[in-house]
Amino acid sequence: MKEIEHDSRNNLEGIKGWLNPSRYGWERISYWFQRLTGVFLLIYFIGHVYETSTIVNGQNAWESFLELTQTVWGHLFLIMVIGASSFHSANGIRLIFTHVGIGLGTPSRPDYPYSPSSLNYRQKSGIWIALILSAAAMYYGFTVLFGE
Amino acid sequence: MINSNENNKDEKKIVLKIFRENTAQKTDSHYDTFNVPYKKWTTVLDALLYVKSYMDPSVAIRYSCRMASCGSCGMKINGIPRLACYTKISELETSTIECEPLPNLPVIRDLVTDFSRFFNHHKNIQPYIQSKDGVDDPDTEKKTFSFYQSPDEVDKYLQFSYCIKCGLCYSACPTVGTDLKFPGPQALAQLYRYYADTRDETKNRLDIVDDRHGIWRCHFAGSCSKVCPKGVDPALGIQLLRSYMLGISKNDKKLAEKNEIQTDEESI
Picture 1 (spheres, each protein chain N blue to C red):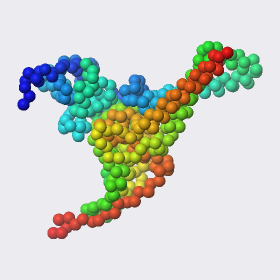
Picture 2 (cartoon, helix red, strand yellow; picture 1 turned 90 degrees about the horizontal axis):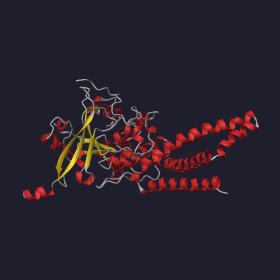
Picture 3 (spheres, one colour; picture 1 turned 90 degrees about the vertical axis):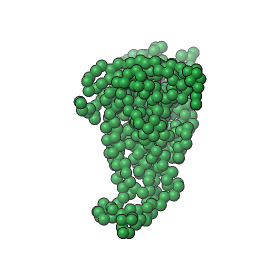
Picture 4 (tube, chains in turn brown, cyan; picture 1 turned 180 degrees about the vertical axis):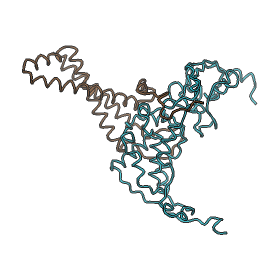
């Protein structure tokens, strides 16, 4: 029989495993959003550095580049940036606390039906607060950018 | 004794889709579909064994205790890693059940996966009590000791010692899915289990996972704790361990007092 290699990538989920996060509950959805917003913000920051660097080519170059953000699509992009940064920050603060063991409960003898203390209401509330803050910030951005 | 008419009245049918692949013979993967009768207490493992007994004996599955104690029958059932013996068909509330091998573990055949990588990570964290006694003195190593631990000291690690090594947490972890060198939730939670045990005297245990592929790769998706069939809560163990490694929690562990026990052999 063929020997199976221990470092085989056969059946490895890869980033496909990030798809359909709802099957594992809110914590997995929050993980998925945290990663997506992180990648999105990285792309934004690279673009932002490029945008601000255009000033070295003079005021006209700077202003013509800035006009890109004054279109409907530019406004929608900025609203996405506001939402992503709000969620990433709020959820990130929650994760900083969890990564040092705060807000997770303490180990205890498990009784059936099992309810993991690390997935407690504090964590779910934190995720919901991050989502609500993000939606509120996006709404505020929308009224400022598309308002009178 | 149950009346046979009553028996038939309770009986419904479920469509069971089973993943088929033979890695050794390099056959293409596909799904076979079976209509299986079930009752309200029928588990997915019962249904698979029914298929094996009456429909297709070539279906490969791994199982043993049938009571969620051995951790052998882990598989992906309707997209989520679960124990087949611990999952009732009636609780899934679907007309079709899809059984696939556990993700992130190489497929050997059909629903059977190779756990070598998983167990290698487990062995790597040195999952046993280590005492300084006996390291330099082989005579001391032969002696038997009893340890005194308070209930509070036991509670710090007992939850994690219920792990049955079924691999469900390892399969559900999104980090394992992208990094084979990551030890996975099971091994990391076991490291915490031994680290928190007052009988263990090892000081360098944390160095094993202080690596860029180690504990720092956990981003607390919580999926490991979500799928654990024994309430072990690996995510909790990992975060508590990280708290020690970051110096936020102080390790105030007092080593357990021990008394030498005279064995029968010695007293003779």
